[in-house]
Length: 118
Length: 112
Image (cartoon, rainbow over the protein chains, first blue to last red):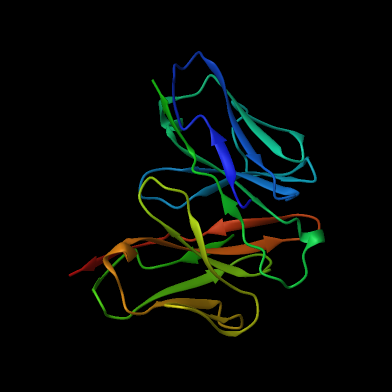
């Protein structure tokens, strides 16, 4: 199973709503990532989790709150978002650096959640 | 800072060969990846280079020169379905954590 599953696929939320995006993988990967992608732009890294601990926050506003409750799950909690936060949110996972050699260890991406903030 | 640059758009004809270049300046280097992304879909892995040289995988090949901060993706026998965005991504960071940073992306359009 080389799948990363994200739910929901589409989400429309108001600026005062609280919602969560979910990501799940069962490949035993201990590095998980959140990316934001605007139309016709490359994915931008938001957060990195290493062994369920937040290791990188790319200066993301606090209205985005990540959580990694166990080694298979990654959540992104959303609160008080702005219309400019509308984007495709991608989750990815890969073997952690400590678990790799020089082997091919690409990141696998989920299909994303298309978020619209109204 | 980190810069990973690619041409914005390229066009090519079905059956032809196209080379997509990527130049990078990053803090730390633990490998370079090429991903393909069709509109509205997730990026899918194409190739990986961590040592200098050429990696071949069917119709796709990728080359890396670490001293020059340069990579290219070569697509042979182009098909219409190869019309997509091609993303160069550099893995940087440390032993305990790393990050995959994407380049600007190249939109390739294949014409009959």
